Each structure stands twice: as C-alpha cells, then as structure tokens.
Picture (tube, one colour):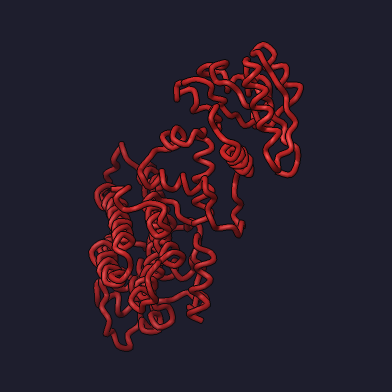
Length: 200
Length: 251
C-alpha cells in the first residue's frame, strides 16, 4: 500500500458518505484519493472519469445484477467492490462483492479488509515462487474446503466472488503442491487449522 | 547416486526424470535375461507381469520367453519402450506385437497394484504412523484409502470396458458405440495423487524420524514411478496399437 489508492464512495446519505470518507482518511499507512458520488445517475460518468481501483457502494442502489453491468459499462472491470452495509441486504446480492463494510466496523477491521483486498490484487502465484506459506485468507479457504464446502458456498461465506475463490484455490495448490481436498485435509490437521471433529 | 536421484525427484514433482543409472541400450532376444534385469532392475516387474519367474539361469531373453509361453516380440517391445522412456505415442506399431499378450501384461499389472502393492503399502503405512498424533494418522489413512479407491475405479474401467472392447475387436467385432479414443480422452494420470501423499509426508509429517516411514516413502516413490510407466504403456503403446487395429478393421 505505498502508492495512492483511488477510491469512490457511492452513498446517498451525506452523513454516512462523509463518515466513510473521514474513516478512510484517518487510516494509518493508507494514502487515498477519494471521490464522493451521491446518486446513481452520476455513477457511470464519475467512474469513467476517475477510474477508481476500489468502489465502496451502498448495495441497495444497484440491486441484483447492477454491479456487473456498472463494471462493464464503465470499463472498470478490474475494480474491486466493497458493499457498504447500512441496512439488511439479501446475501444473494452481496455475493457479487469482494467484501463488505458495516456501519459498526472499527478502524482496524476496515483497514484489514482493505489490505486483504489489495493483497488479493496480486493474483496468480507463479510456478517458481519461493513463497510457500499461506496467507490468512488462503488458510480460511483451506478450512472451508476441508469442511466440504463448494466454491459457491465458500464465496458466500467469505463474501468473495467465486472467481476469487478459484484463484485462491489455484494459488494454494501451487504453493503446497496439494491439489485434492483429502490432501488439504491432512495439511489442515497437521497445521491445526481444523480439528477432526469439525470435518466429520 | 541413489540419494541424488531422490532429491532430484522432490524438486521436480511433476515429471520424474529418467534414471541415468540404468543402461539404455535396445535389448534383443539374444541378450541374457539376467543382464536385462541387473542393468534395469524395474524390468523385474515387467518380467513378472508377463508371468516369468526368477531362476532362469544363463538363458537369453528369447529362450526364457518361449519356455514360459510369452510372446517374445511383445515382451521386448514393452521392455524397450520403457527403457527408451518415450514421452509420445509410438508412430509405427510393430507388426509382430501380440495385443492379447499386451492386455494380459496390463491386466497383471492391475492385479499387482490393487491386490499387492497398494494393500502392502497401506499395512506398512499403518505401522509406520502409530506414533504420530491420532487425528493426523486418521486423515493420512483416509487419504490413502480414498486414493486406493480411485485407482480401483480407474483400473476397473479398463478391465470392464476397454479390454472386452479390444478382445472383441481382435475377433473382428467392432462395437459401434465405443472406440479407443473415448478411453484415450478420459484416461487420467493416476500417479498424481500418490505423489501428493509423498509431498505431504515429506513436508508436513509431524512424527519422529522413523526407518519404517522412510521405507514407506521409498515404496511410494517407486510406486509413483511404476504407475507412471504403466500409464505410459497404456497411452503411448497400447492406444496407438488399438488405433491401428481399428483403422485396419474399418478398411
């Protein structure tokens, strides 16, 4: 997180929008360039102009299929998206988001979520990569896999896209040279990520 | 020499490299059987799968084969194919190759893996991991049992579908619903998962140093190699031979 991160905040409530902005500005070690967007009408145009790397948006504004079409139409397909939760939202909608921030999240939680997303941004681990240890996100995914969850279920549980889950699984397989669920189970038990009773 | 081989395999887990310690000249039927085995000891498995026992004295390959009713051409084709370690399908199938004999060889190899090799490793593994934490031992055993079941499925398919199809083909009957290309496409690398177990034991096994576990590890290394060779024979020797046979029948 050395360079400046371009973030757009989309939220009709000025209080919440400014609050989010203030929190982001106060996060240590994060340099941001923020764009505030208050209505959906301005959304596409703003995205095209500012091309943010991260979109923090109230999911109620976009509904079920809105996020993908916004990404496509603004040609910001690489943009990460965080749902800003101000009310109860159907988990089906949240599936499309990379992560979510709630009104009661503290600074540390928000910082961790941003860091995790930006680490995710380094996608494929190359074949020659020396690094063998798993990130905390990858460990979470290993735990889900050995519990028998499908990619879709893992995506729902961790608020990731299934695409991201698949990328993580591919990286895990490359790092550990373990491709099967039963192989990951041995890894998880040996490294005390799960207990036997959790997976039976 | 031995040790160097092993460490090389750990670094390159996907493709076990051809062992340079074996002589890799082409064998003829006038060569001594004992020379073949001493120069390439994995060939003892090939010999056994053709139904030839040890104790053949000074006889040459041709004599030993004839004495055991083994087709010499097929025996030498398999031996030389494995020694050459080709990574692509053979282009011209030797006319003297007996497909019936090749099927028997593959069938006996299946029997060896399923009824001897894997159960034997399983028993040894059981003894080797008694001192490791119970939960770890449990998931290792579970892994191995699942793997054995996969190998069983893989080989049963060949026994129940591919071999009967080919035997009918040899009698001149072509099943309109099946062809060897179907098999070729669905045939997976059955040794991949056992090499995974090897990696896991090497990197993460939490127990103490154990002679027995090291011995199991050696068994896994050689079984991995053996299964890979077996698959090579099927993919690059058996399948091309059947393709040629299908072509001949369609003419």
